[in-house]
Length: 116
Image (cartoon, rainbow, N blue to C red; front, side, top):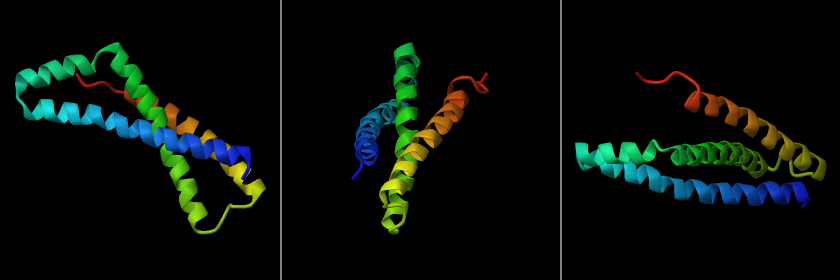
């Protein structure tokens, strides 16, 4: 196993763990929405703080990488791309596609059309 494969696999696991922890924010928001207008307003205020936006950016990065690396693992499950050279190329492809996806989703989330 090459160091590229090892590094991308470890990072895939870390992003999966981070995304699992990020689900706590979703559970908090859904609970607040179900708890009434006052709880929803408090949650909206907390989840709109600048530090929350940094967390959202980290979650977008983690999601994009985990998604693309997961597709790579699905391809590996078919028995393709397991040779050393192919594995190294696919590691770089995962990083490149993840960065492009991060930029697109990041732009949509933070600079795209905003609700009135």
